[in-house]
Image (cartoon, rainbow, N blue to C red; front, side, top):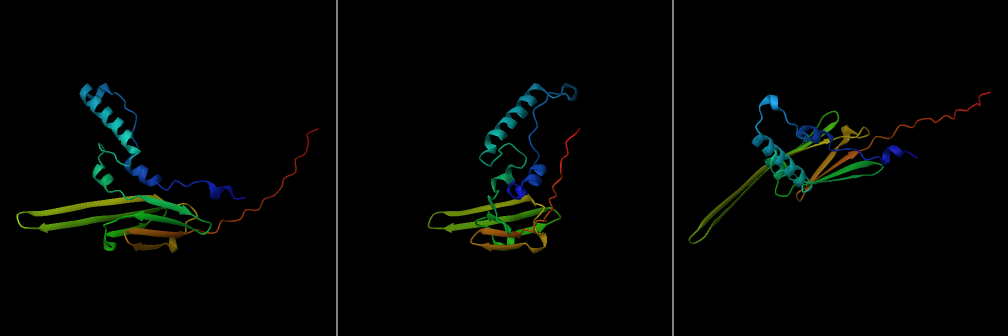
Length: 178
């Protein structure tokens, strides 16, 4: 039995590195941080951690990017990995998929305008947002044969798996010490 195929892969490793994880708050009197600034930073950190379970970080620098952060469904079979990205309202031409040695970047931009003219009012609504998801690829992902299909606001990416290399198991006899 190949146990390695049952160990989950951390697809979000690169994305977590880019965003940075919140560090425990440390007081540094040498840098002249006022108690008010310390309190403000600590409250931001607490709220960031509280909202992280909901997929938003309201006090982070990346809040605008987090507002429009598409969800991912990841699945794996013996033959391939499948990633489904929900991006409703985004045109196919505004979605880009890039691969490097061990990373996949999915990025795109949403542009939506609505204009309503009636008797005594005029309404114009605009909605813009960009997103970027960075995924670490497992070692057995076949990066050369990736396929992507965009249909009804869902980007489905299929990554074939390379066949696992068989390792010969050799039994070693144990001798008793005299």
